[in-house]
Image (tube, rainbow, N blue to C red; front, side, top):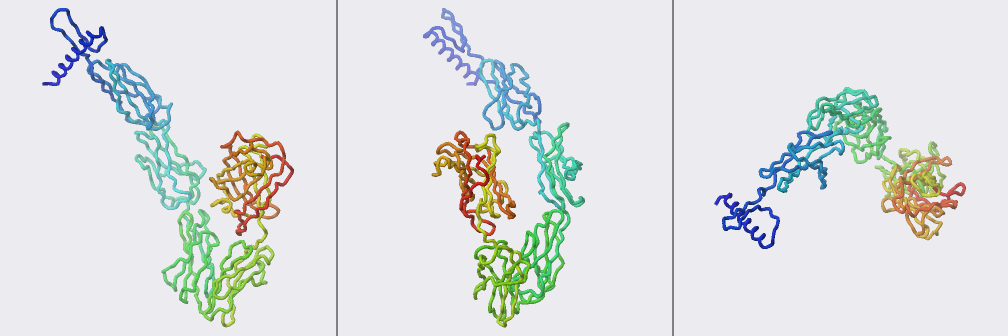
Length: 606
């Protein structure tokens, strides 16, 4: 039986069922039309003319969309015809469709003002309804809105040399074809010159040969065009071109060399600066160079232990590398290593010394060692005194620095060998003895907010130490630059300091930093409440009373928890800072926890 015959039979059966239902239940509405007579002549029944939904699809644009564009759909229905087609859009990845228009006649299209939406990807779909009420939804079509396409240039780094690869990237470029060029200019001049032109395909790259340019700072940018549309990348400013090698020379370490000696080079670079200096040695006139150490800061020096080397003639040289990667090698200095008698050296104990300072030596003698002592003298003088004596079979002794006045001293070690001959080490100069206790000097606040006497955004808290502090002991890894922190203000009732003992401390994450706490001696927050402020903490070195000290400043942001609990203090008082012993000075001495009272007249804080 054919499909048409089956369909006709099914419709006839449905018509009979509908007639029977109508006879039992009175007049009813039906999608089936029929006719009958009161005679016994044959009855005729017919089914609705449309049982299938329409077909519909969105016509995909061939380019990125810009401004007012026409979106179109194609719809058809072979039976009752298309009644309407509704077009709608949604941002790519969204789940809410926004209607654009409903068209009732072909061509089924409408205008979309893309300038009213952000650039990016969008999905378009159409919903068609036929005259029988059936509907169909098209597959969505992804389009790109690019009213403001952009271009960015890859960052080659702060310092470059030789040939540098550059590439540009387009954003929201859509399906159009863009022409990209990369340009450079002397920094700040605005006089742009092309590096490469007519880049048509990603990654829109070319090589920048800096060898023909004068050393100095340059700006870079990328420009993308399509017909009358042009986009310019953010300018990469002050890229330093440095194609000049640094200057480097070896300093004469003396001769013969024995024990552990200090090897030093001098290096400079007028453009990008010296990045590192490798100090090397080679036996005799050989070319097999061995690196002793690589120094990254001046003075470019290291300790050279010669005792493991055979005696003889050695070449010494330095290889300097600047921040751009240019290298230079110094002239070779030839010196003799002779460890057949004695050698003595003193390790640098550090810039700051206090309490019992460990002084480490390295001593050797083929005649045997009778004694090793470490001596000190006021810096720049030759009046040497014994700091400590190194025990037999040891390499270090402890100098009780508390028995000498604070000041700057030179240090050396002296070896007496089995024959009674003295060998003196190289002098370690300019080491400061400082046994003055570390303490807090002062605490102050300043109002930067709108209300005096109330903690607010812009207010500052300033803590002054008596010495230069190790900022890393206050907050792990901190170098004193701006550090995001949280300032916590708590009612004194929570801390047992009373209602007028409201206290602040500083947190990084959930942990307190090594500043201690400040009792504001006033009522700045409601009873048993806590408020927190985002804040920024910095540390600077300043001169107070002729001494270099560390000053920590905390600047409050807008309160982010507990704003309704803040109060405006009405009573003037001098607050008290209780420092933390976690903070240490540059010599590692811990700060006193003795409270520090705010100097100056009584006032309200903030």
